[in-house]
Amino acid sequence: MTFVDAGLRCEIGPKAFAGQPALFLDRDGVVVVDTDYLGRVEDLQMIAGSAEAIARCNALGIPVVLVTNQSGIARGYYDWTGFEAVQAALSDELARSGAHLDAVLACAYHKDGNDPLRIDNHSWRKPNPGMIVTAGKRMSLDLARSWIVGDQVHDLAAGRAAGVAGGTLLIADSVDRQQALALAGVQFTVDLAASLADAVTKLLEQGQLGTMP
Image: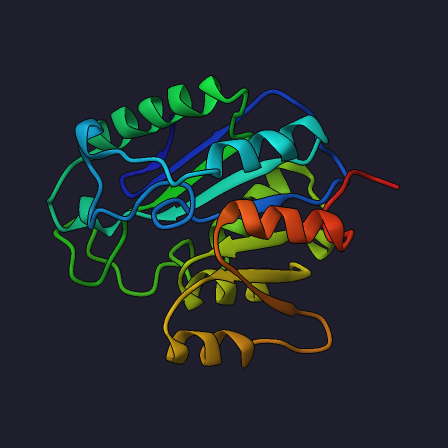
């Protein structure tokens, strides 16, 4: 995991994806079960079908980029060592299904964190678009044809702010659904799905994801 600064991590794989759209994913609640501040390997639980959904995208040459807020680090619940251990375990779990992540970006900054991570509204922290924009620049991605899947409205808001084509909110309560649907506009599409596997199936069937034409 590449150190950007005290509160940011960015790891980008070697494969070239210049000009291609990407699938951006939140981690907790999308790929793995949200156990409330996941910082220990023993608490890692894969969501059924998530690894296989990522493998489908890998097989089609669609770059998969993880963008995750990690305020648990700022709050002192765990540290970057714990985060990196969880990521290594996640990589192992994905590999069992023939899947991998092409990039991982994480932001630990939070207004309620401990110094030096006590920063309010950092540009990388979702709903701000910093992680997506950074990945887009470093990987030369086509953000205007990219998509984001999250379990919180702020995931989709970050995608919209970054200029991606649309976002999928995984099943949430009615208030979250209403807020997510309110983000929709001429240049940003919003969809709902039961899981990452369901979202990927819909996106592929609708032609929303794919490599360069």
